[in-house]
Image (cartoon, rainbow, N blue to C red; front, side):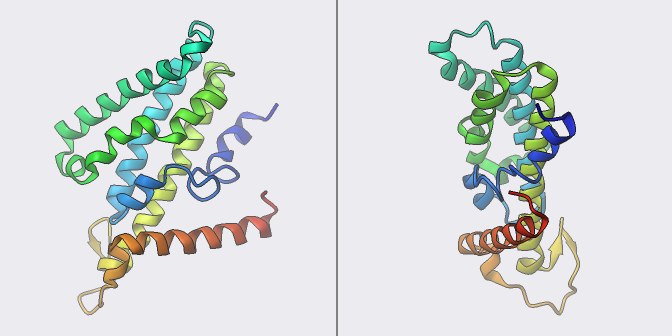
Length: 200
């Protein structure tokens, strides 16, 4: 059995949802035009993943096997609705930017996958650690992708101009193809780094 530190770190490194498992590609490619959008999507997903892992772990022996997937989706949808309402009330600009990707968290394979593969088989403590690791790995990935696209696409990071007024933005990185290009480069760099570090 892995230690809690290993359980947490696997979501950031060895089993990073974006750079290692290639999960959750819709929000990864769709909302990372700005670092703030990527961070906001990551934190929203982390919240839903954490809360659903806790509830599913607590109820794992009470949910009949035949209806566990519909039950998981109902639990996840409850927390997605909470996130949607909170963002709409307190961060309307972010809510408007994320748009359809907020309700799509319900079918995000990261969350449903952790519910099926981990939370239903482990206690609440380990499920919390798993959710935090996976959620933080996803948040870091989206934020890094957003930082790179925003920096070279508009010269700023989190809305703060970094490269000055003389910088000529690379409009391609702010477009959908730019998301694919940036992600492809980051995937290559991560694979190279993980091989050098012996992380398989």
